[in-house]
Image 1 (cartoon, rainbow, N blue to C red):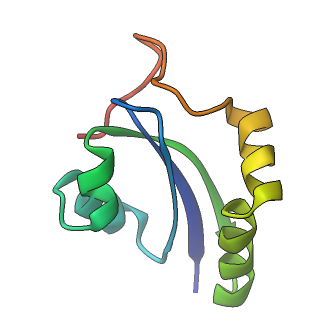
Image 2: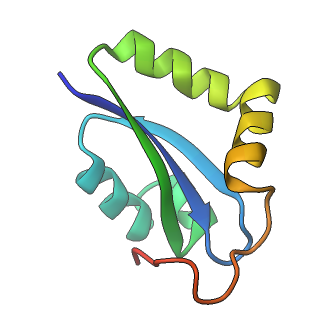
Length: 94
């Protein structure tokens, strides 16, 4: 089974959402339609990053790491700190 860890960023406030799924298209639809709590918080968003894993446990460990202090530090270095994306650089999915 293919499991994805994904990172979204809000286009309005720049906050990131880190999640895990086996169906990225379904999950993005849930976020954009407000079905999930994360979608309601993010509003319009962009997909920043995905990572694929063969086992759920490996994906879950990565998700937990990305939500940790060291993981947030890696995210800040890789994608920049929180803040609204610059105009014209983000691709909205909603």
